[in-house]
Image 1 (tube, rainbow, N blue to C red):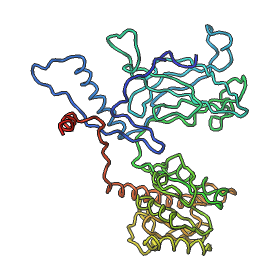
Image 2: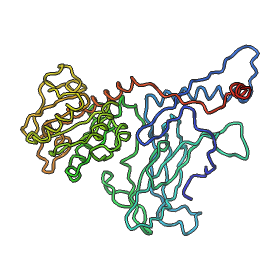
Image 3: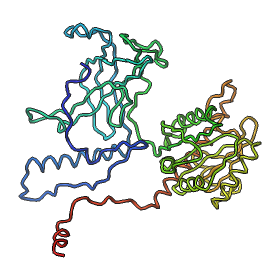
Length: 437
């Protein structure tokens, strides 16, 4: 009762131009396109006809993946409805929804077309004491992946609707979510759509199909004993949340992991364009921890260190780290006036003042040291006293730092060679020579 009639197993191989979900990004597999060579006398059979059509689908999907993001195009609303008359009495529980007609696009560029209303029953049984999030999602289903008893001349590309207790994966489009209480509770329409209550439909996280941003910057927050209880993480999240609204081309990744500092495993940190650490305590590294930091910086990453103006020990510790890495700190005012930290994407002549204290920025390769309270103005302060101009200026300078980190990472990676996987298939000719030896 909880899913669309399409319940057959999907058995086909992954699409050759599909996006692979990873913990940090979506990476397009790279394969050459193969096109049917047309000539007189060519015999057309089903296999050639299918491969010819697949070629055009692949080109279309590559174009969509390169320029756009998945999401809802039109419709696909979700309404509360009474239980249908023909369902057993145990399902007459106030948990029936109706998905309205509409169109969405998935991450591979496949259209998801829902032509008519679909009745759906939320069957989740919450056994924990706390409420749990239920996600209602839709995904594309290729007819070639279904096990059919009969094959018709024309097959309709279709879809599947599911409820989940885990967030949507890369190939699913979220329709709504519900924070469901334990027990036999009924669903409700939210009284305030911006602040839905328990057991209410929540539409705030629906993704809308749109153009893909030029860059998605990935940031991690470095935790020390000093910063675990502060507001720096929330301020960083605010900066990433508003980055796209201010630039349209740069987007902050919504996932912000918290890593321990000093870095114990640089292979994890390498997945992020920027690592952010704030506080007033000195940064002390042993030989191995210093080598881990150097490995991260050499990969193109940026370490953003924020320090109060009166934290002398912290400032001296940062100076010692940069000197040990043979990249001395330089004042941004003495660097080229077109340095990206000053000009891209927002233009700064003089650096701003936060809480009437002027900021100072020093740069040492991939280490950016901000002296002052820059991150305090990335979000709303508790007393709501910061002027709008101060918040906007701080966010714009923060975005310049994010842009610098993303570009440094990408241009550093362009110097690296691509590892080409070795084929696991045995070479028959080599096997023959081995036997002759």
